Image (tube, rainbow, N blue to C red; front, top):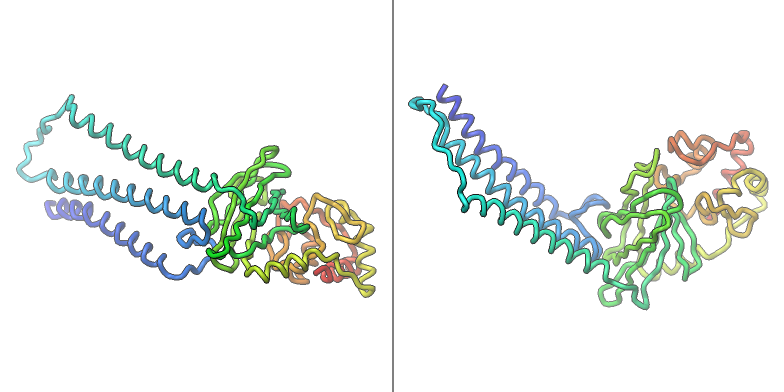
Length: 350
């Protein structure tokens, strides 16, 4: 019986040490090159770096509290464990100790104040930044369940895939994003670039990023906004400046067309598609759904729910519920011939 009690006491000491070892192992692994474009331990933009630094400070403080509390518990469990010669009487109780009460009141208050001040400073530092002369301005509009991006000074409108230039420290090119909502509450979050920012109807909000590395950064809506909230994904492509300029020029071009797909265009323009979607240079000028003028320049469809392939595109038009249950896009009930024609037409929109 005594051996059992001793083993329980040892377990109380060893278990926290195992937890700390595991946490240290995870932290060491996170110093390796990031494998995920959503790795919060690999910030690639100034706002994300500020948030990461704050997170590490909070984690250090809470880890220190954890070590102190667990150490005291382990000490008490071992020091005052029940022994064979115990008479079963309750130990002397301590009441009304001013020193103890002051300690457990003042110390937590000081810790909370320190965490509050650190958090307030990071929030102020991130929010006080204003657009510079060479900044890129984007308007991001959250819809159920997709993202609309407008570049007001560049004459570009696109959806779900945000393109921005890399911000070279020698030539900073930050991107300032005005956040609007077309329907309900949404939340714009790209973990490696910036913190979460709400999109609230009739309440414009803002965020900014200055990515230091080219590449693809993934994010999504982080506020429950309806059935397909989990698949309201977004992709941020950070490109070299010259590549970004080429993308802008390509997006400014009118939608391409061909006589080969004239039947598909006729079907597209004679159905309810034009009430929701815009295709530049045609009668389609809807605003409820994504702009399709350069649809095939995007890697995904349905706000990142599927790759932009002819097969997925055809299925998306035929049965949106298969790819995205709860989607507000209706099935158009086209014949197989009409479906093939429309798909072929959309494949020319680059």
